[in-house]
Length: 276
Image (cartoon, helix red, strand yellow):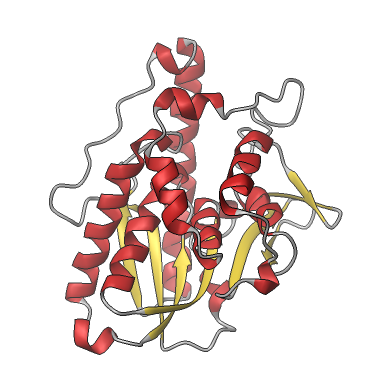
């Protein structure tokens, strides 16, 4: 397969799944190591964040930064939104990423990129293909009740994973040799040595009741994403699906970046080995 991959242009679809989206980094590294050329990217939620940063050419800097973050560092990035429509404003996180990656406009990126969000008013997918990169990412990661919604061009937008946890249709306009999708909501581990299920939140994350709420929210999101992803993949199948287990990490466990990247790399290599 490695010989066949050299120079092969692919459209990459990066799915939603909170912190599990850090596995996308390992997937991208594995694809490039096999000689694939990523010619276009569509992403929802964390797939939009990782995909947009890769399209801008700054994924190694983001990888090194996120893998250096401890649990306490992640908590310091959370700007609580008292009285707003969400627990976290998200401006502190986005400002940190802007400083790390720089300002970019989507239409100027070296790799064509689409961030998928959800319009609450029309209840439809929104494909963000122009404008400031981090405005699009901020909209796509706005998990309801966790992050406040983000307004883009007068539209109140939230997490793209609500309607498109694996945003396949957003890549269909690109001319590529194949479409490869990453689904973060698999039912069971598909690679040896996959991560153990996450440990339930402990009081260091916050009061016990808050931790229980996060755990319930995490399992609820996983249930919704899993069902929606199965429907999308059945209706619009890509050439290859790389699946990761939905119990690999809870949506808030961003301090597990290094092991999640490794899980993504192993899952991609296993899927590529079986792809003929």
